[in-house]
Amino acid sequence: MDYRRFYQENIYGIWREGEKVTYTRMGENRVNIQVETRGRQADFTIEVFMPEDEKKVRYSGSAPFIICMHPIESKDCALEHGYGVILMDSYQIASDDDKHVGCFYELYPYGKQAQEQTGVLMAWAWGAAKILDAVYGGLGEELCFDPEASIVTGVSRWGKATAVCGAFDKRFRMVVPACSGAGGLALNGVTSTGKTYNFESIGGPQKYTYGENEPLSCLQSEAERGWFCDRFLDYRDVSEIPVDQEMLPALAAAPGRYYFIIAACMGEDWVNAPAMWECYLKANEIYKQKGLQEHLVIHIHKEGHAVLKEDMELLTAYFDKMYYSMETNLDMAKLKTSVFAEQ
Image (cartoon, rainbow, N blue to C red):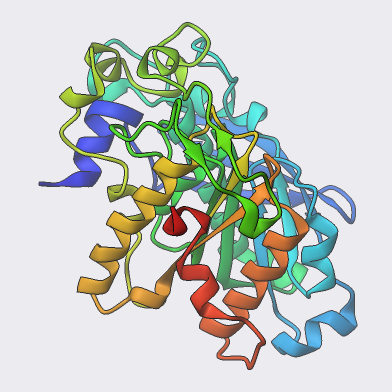
């Protein structure tokens, strides 16, 4: 099966690329990205943050960088480790509803035909890709960011969009979807509602019982249906969907690319961390078959719907090890397991 085609036609909508992308610096930390295609033009603004010069030395003056689909609380930690940070205002790209307005839809109006439909998650993924276009087009040289050392991340709905981005833009060197849940990296048929887990080994309670997980009906509700294309609304039960979510990380499996899944154990009942752990296990088998077992890792922290400082410490160390072949204190075995493996 052509999985990229399936996801486009049945879940997320059509992936767009090939536009003319230019940029204009608007001071030290702001950049306007201009996109032109088929006689239409649109633009959006990003914020850029560069690590201090002494932090760049370890990367020969051209820093790796992280495109964040929204502000993240561990931004300063990334900068301290010598990583540049680019913040995208996703709402400029596409509004978070089914109105289909924003920069993306100025270029590609949402239509009635399948080939004219791109959901918001795919539109946000496109936005990150256009930023990467600008980095390759000269912005990277100006900021001392290495275009070949790009990372994309996002949390929750933006974690879903990050997973989509990693599947459709092969240029991103590492993909870091965080707390993505249903429609992201939670397997469709795996539920944890009512199940009790022992989290003592990570400093949590001995008995933690999960509440309700996000159901298909919520993804198809008025509040969230805009994230997907119209065909997705036709599924009445997750059992009808012939492709499960492990294929999103599987589509990013390639030599020289890396995948770092983030989730949380507690307070994430709705997001369904056990289903993301199961997704990792299934995707890991695909990575193993390709001889890329170290290219897919996971960190499930105790609690926090975010990319925490502890996550940033780990993902930068992992990237340093895998991409730059640096000596680190990273224990790879800890990134290949989780508290759910103990249950």
